[in-house]
Image (cartoon, rainbow, N blue to C red; front, side, top):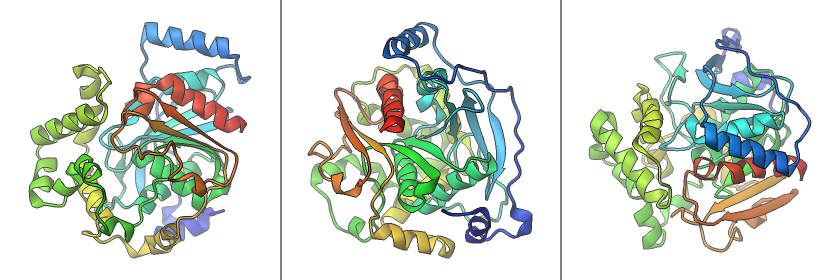
Length: 353
């Protein structure tokens, strides 16, 4: 298990880099901590659908290299569940998942990843790095700042990759894992080889971001807006979201670090941008594709163009602990927002594996 002294050394932080919570906002509402019946879960789902949901006032905490903005719901004494979003999304991918888990007695924490929303770098001199281990260590720093030795980690896209890295490298910090898309750790050597044409086509924006035209588009507010909206439309073909739903999330893309983080992330994956030396030990371990031993539920979204065929068989050997796999029919890439009840149920079931 990584401890705080080791973590500070990994990030290049001295004694002055110790995390200090600066929490603001309303206290989280209290809920019964005992698990509810399936019928009760369905009743709360119906209430959520009828009334709509929103997060309470957001909070902030100093964590490692960042001041992280996050939403929180549920009782402070509940089992912590950290929900991690992807690109091009934000915390609102979990706006309907969080109250379902909070009603089951869990403390639900939904942070903005670096470069998104209200999350900011503490120092203007810090390199705006989007590589996978840097984002995973942000989450470890958040847990340390909030005093959480262990949490359930659940996510999709960048968030699933981040959660899976923590489960693989620091299993003592991860009580259970829910990963949309299975085992998503980036292998830089493998990424140098071409994929099937249809798969390459789905990744069109990755190659666009490798060009200066793509970088300029991400820095241009209007083009960034239209590009991310296009991604939403193409990777979630059955999700009938409205303009207000997209605009609520698109506000998170106004973060001044958004474009450099996104561009670096995708260029780094293709070995077109270098990472930082401080993260090399973690990347070397990840290159060996370490096995995940914590209780895990993997989800495949049927209409997600990035879902690999084989009903999870392509990555089954990477999960050695208690395990379950589910395919969500008719669901696209933004799985927790398209199917919040199924995602919340996966979290609850992963805890009980």
